Image 1 (cartoon, chains in turn brown, red):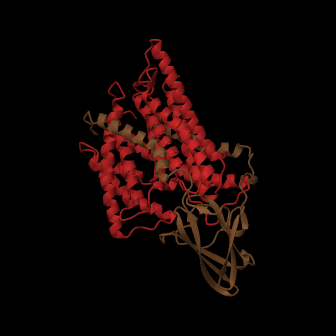
Image 2 (cartoon, rainbow over the protein chains, first blue to last red):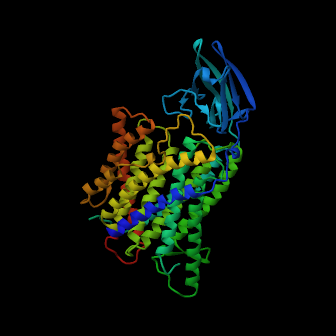
Image 3 (cartoon, rainbow over the protein chains, first blue to last red):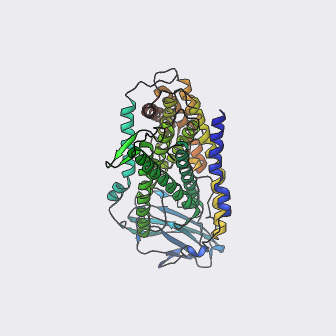
Length: 190
Length: 349
């Protein structure tokens, strides 16, 4: 039992040494190391009586490629509350960086004066639907825009998965050999 | 190095633990903050852990090869039986497995870098290169379990085996994020039943008792609590030091800890209830069902809706079935690990 306690204490220390290491590490990186939001394409959307500019950091958008989206109502985000519902080409709604059921527009973390989605990817090619809602001094309004998404870049996904599942097959093969070998003796638990 | 089996085994275990801490922190970072470069502290923990595992594995393989060639005997407590590799090396099987896992990890790290050049920052965890990276780590951790099991009977080996299985099981829960969201049966929940009962039954059959199984579940619970406190805190502090804000709607819930089953001791209870049976299958079914009944309550914290009663019942039934399958496999894996130990030992913890 004492050995067990020693083992537990050791593991606790292993996990705990991360804290002082984290605190003691000199910071070399700064926020400038992170890509600033660079909008290369904009679309202006009429939402009832309001105007909303949607920005994309990559255009055209390709499936599974991460990019930044910005949403900026004319007059600034302080004068509105905004909502966003993102639906895939098959009509399935996705959470878009929010807990399930919440539709509020988050500010863009690297450009807090606009709403936005950072490092966000649309998983499948086809026409995605963004339903945007604004509520300002002239009441609530919604509008829908289509975001066309092209095929994913790079090698075919099947090939990528084939390359990437080698360790998984090694594990499964190893376990299979062990299961066959381990079955050669009767195993009892008292 | 190979005269003291505990030295490389514990170094390998420290490498595995470092990778687990790094993964937990990294998931939290991507959840609450967002973009990263290769040079972040969470990545340092992940990659340093893998480097330590790889280097110690290589050192042991070279030392064992040298010793064998000069006619000295190498204790099988160092990583188990030796396997001839390329007709040149004499690699103890545990360190061969951990070394291959660590080497694959580096290759998939390069694949991941190329992928990011094409796809940009990480938007998803379950990308092909990430699956390659994570399963490589699991292979290295499996090697760590084998090295601890091979030394059964030595004083240090019991706690080390318990810790290595806890680290492997805890880390393996990351596979849940690659599974689709529920249909009739909640795939993530039944996967928890399968993996948990396999690990617990393996320890039970290897040690021929339940003390080490209780210790394994307790150790994982302790690690889960420590990571739940550490990861969100470290993410907040690190983001502040980098001048990055937390995302709106980031809830700060511990992402990795919530993937680990907090009710793992119920799985142990299932094995304990059925310990008179010849195999662990019945115990696996009981434990698997208990885990499948309780895990969704934990997932609900992350906003995952609870299933309606009929589907929840189907999930519990599937959890029992997969728990039984897992325990049956775990039983045999324990038997295979015993083959590494030359002398029959009593309970090793």
